[in-house]
Image (cartoon, rainbow, N blue to C red):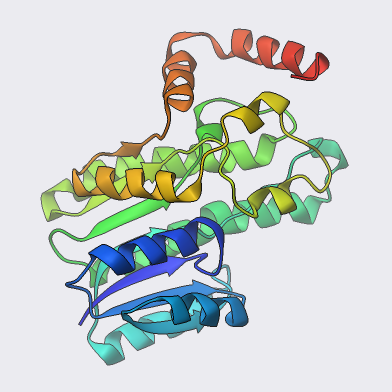
Length: 257
């Protein structure tokens, strides 16, 4: 049985991946949707034409991943695509954030993604694919978004390295690095802080970011960067010393930009 696994599937980017892949991936037997919110998962499943299995679970709990592996073995399933979308961010001063909030970001954005990926690779075969949701925040340090940006830098670095490791096995890993996306992400992220106003002007729609990510995965690209402004940021972050960029960002913040 060929399956697609999507974490964070109840809303935002995970939901969008499920909706778009449902339209185009005709050789898939089942979609397995993972999130902590069972009711939202049911709503997403109701929108899909494929047979869908909902798995309400917290992916930061290894015992739940044990259960997932048991089901994979029981169903003799082959993971054709793993889409790791589960994650969250919190803006604001690091020293003013509760310690547990910072650690929770690391557990979900880094540790859970790593464990999920490591556990699922043995159930893949040649031409299977992995999509890891990173962020343009991975390109350089982000004051007042310090832990989140650091976690996404990890995701991007991990994804690019793993893509090279898995090439001999015919498995592609694509790190997706969008800028701000119009999803519920900011409802949580901006509880104790706000992003630069200029980021609102480059806000992308999730359908376009996901469409680009799926194309880049199909063509075996190691990275997927949507929109010209974010591509320019990517180039600048590699060409200009980060200290200069950070000084410009601080100046923009002071001017309310």
